[in-house]
Length: 378
Image 1: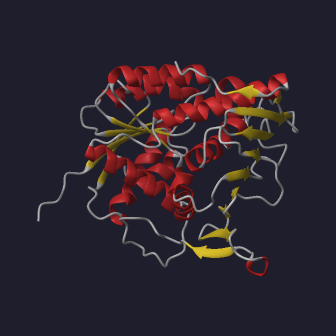
Image 2: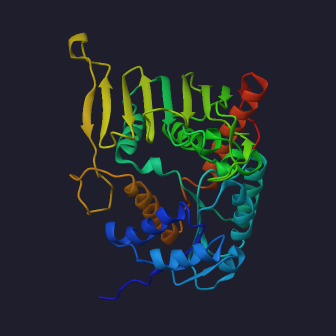
Image 3: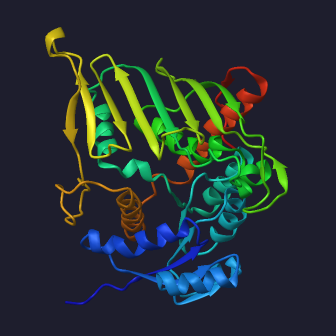
C-alpha cells in the first residue's frame, strides 16, 4: 500500500504556535485517510525561539524572517499564529502564494484591515481558514444540529460568555495585549471573537449592538519583573447586548479578571420549543430542554456528546473530550477542505463578520449608543 505524500507545514509564531504544532502532527493519527503532516519550517521572533521549536516540536529548520518562510517552495500550508497586529501584513503576503493558509483569530486588528484582507482574497480567488476552534466541540455541533432541525423553534434569547482569571494579578504584564495599537482591544478582541463566531454560526449575525467596556486595573508592569508601570489601554471586561434580525435578543460577555474562572465559556440559547446550554468546563455534555413537555416533566436533559468527532475512530466516542481535540479537529477540517478544493468554513468571510461585530461593540462602547451592522461590505 502506497503511503500518501505528507502535507508539508510551515508555522509563523511559536507562542500559541506550540499548540498548533502538536495539533498539526496529531491530525492524521486521529483521522483515517488524512496524509501525515511534516513540520518543515518555523518562523520566530528570535533565533533562540527558533532553535527551541526545532528541539521541542521537531521542525527541520527555522528563520527569523516570515517572508523567507512564505517564499519557500517546499511548503504546502502555512499557519499564522502571531499577535493580532501582525495578521494583516502576514495574510497580505501569504495570499498571493500558492500555499493553503490557516490563521489565528481575530482576522485583523480592526474592520478596515479585515476588509483589505478579504478584498485581496476575493480578487485572487483565495481563502484561508480561521481558528474558531470552539465550533468543533461535539456538544456545540450537536446544538447546531438541533437548531438547524428547528427543534428549538423560534429563538427568543441567548447568552454567551467567556470568563478567565488569567490577568487578576495586577503585577502581571499584559505585554502587547495592553497596547490598543497592537491588540485592537482587550477581551473584546481576544475572547469575544470566539463568542461572536458561535452566535453567528449557531443563530444569526446581530443587526444592532450596544456595549460597555471597563478597564479595572489601569496600570501594570511594562514587562515581567519590570519596575516600570505603564497605562493599560485595553478592556478587562465587556458586556454586549445584541438584537438579531429574527427578533431574538441576548448578551455576549467576556472578562479576564474573574475569580474562580479557568476558561469558562458558556452558551445558552432559548426558543419557543426548547433550549440548550453548554459550558466548556463541562464539555462532554449538552443540556437540552424540551418545551413540549408538561409542567411535571420540565427540566434539563443531559446528553453525553464526549468525543463524537465524525471520521475519527481514535480515541473512541466513549472517551471524555479534551480541549486539544478541538484544535486537531479544526486542522482535520482544514486539510480535508484543502485536499478537496472546497471553501473553508470558518473562512475569511466568517472572520470578516466577526470583525464587524467587534467593531460595532467598540463603537457602541465609545459612543454609548446602539450601533447597527454595516449594510455594505467593502
